Image (tube, rainbow, N blue to C red; front, side, top):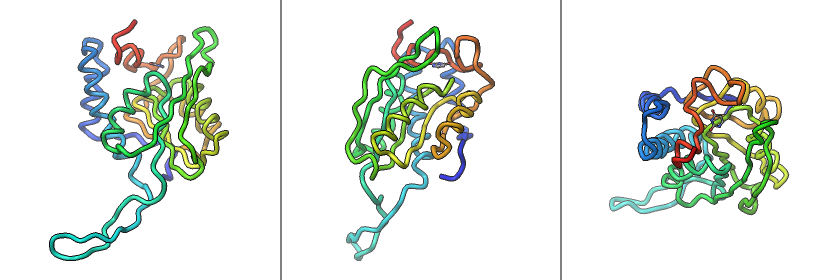
Length: 210
Ligand code: URA
């Protein structure tokens, strides 16, 4: 991917996102829509995967048919909200390997604190797609990608639902080689580090917590 930031302006994505933003949307509705949007975003983030051909036989004749090349993708979910995006993408790419990075945001400093990390082997040979619905300050995403690079990852993409300009800038400075795919670039962050207009706390909306 060549662009640092791709905003997926597809009508279906934008329509579903509007319902998710609405504070009156139920937990079940939010979760279902997140899954649906994740399929559409996954389509975009995987657009330029390497291809090869495989010899097959159709009922009519042999053919060299296009198939994905290289090692299985690694999907890396930043816990806990990343799991909402992960579930949808896994339906589309069931053979992908999956890793988890557990980071929480210290409410005072807004800095990420790591509590868990388990990622697939041979990250240096895989395309890694890091998923987290909200790119807010960018602190968690930058920390997660730091960890992946320490584990050898070289080809990384970042997929989110909403991005704030502050987070995009932070990612561009720390990881200019990591393209970002999102459904929306929102206005700004508020004093608590929430994306405005945003959709609130993605984890709480997804899991029905407060
Ligand atoms: N995390 C969220 O869940 N929402 C925001 O607006 C920012 C970070």
